[in-house]
Image (cartoon, rainbow, N blue to C red; front, side, top):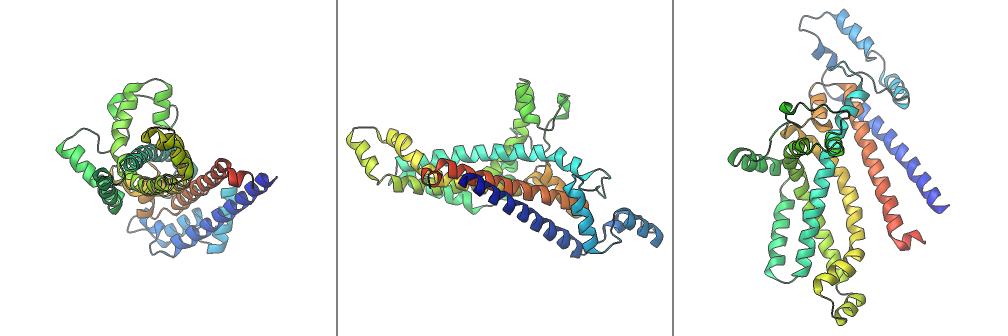
Length: 336
């Protein structure tokens, strides 16, 4: 019953958070200077034309009335119609969301592998030059934002040593017809490894740019947790039994040190999704972040509202899953 009560409490908190995010984005984008209707019409448009479009998109009403109409429609699954693209916002967002999720998941996997391997290596060779070199590399990785890593990767592997694609999501020359917007997962399911390689070639550099700063954060936290565990009594007992140091780290220290890192990974994953906005633009990647920038430039109010609300939903759901997973994995919380 305690677990069910905690879950219901978090769900209510999630709904309140989403409602607050909806209010904030709705008000903020309407006080920012700029008229989206004027951007749709030619310079010589009459006031009658402007009033007609305002009425069409409901912008002729007060802000409170606009919000009530919009949130009522959202509850029914209607996010409105894009002003610039003239398509339903829900269809546009759902069409681009899989690309962003695939990129984020790939970046997370790369970050976990790099950060985890570096932390284990630094713990194994603690007190040596190897640990010092890893600390320096981690500091450099963390000091530069992801878009600078993206520019560096484009220059290195896109221009000087062209190994990967620097724009787009897939090569048009493949002529592969997808049934869903989850291109990578679908290509894997259909055993089209040529398509998988092409998709990976497009995703690798933007995913790596996102992953490098996160890998440095994982390195720092996991390494610190491992160092604390290495002084515990059960580690000393394992050493007296003659186990190798690498075996002790992997078998005894890592399972106890990984819980705080798992929580961090879940929280940072939400920031990773948000960070795709600039990276997708930099690599011309056809994801939700790239669409968000276009929507802001064009003052497409319904599309901005839909994208922000979907991002808020992703953030709250990921945090909910992380909290539930941490409670399930931590015996002290599970039996409290």
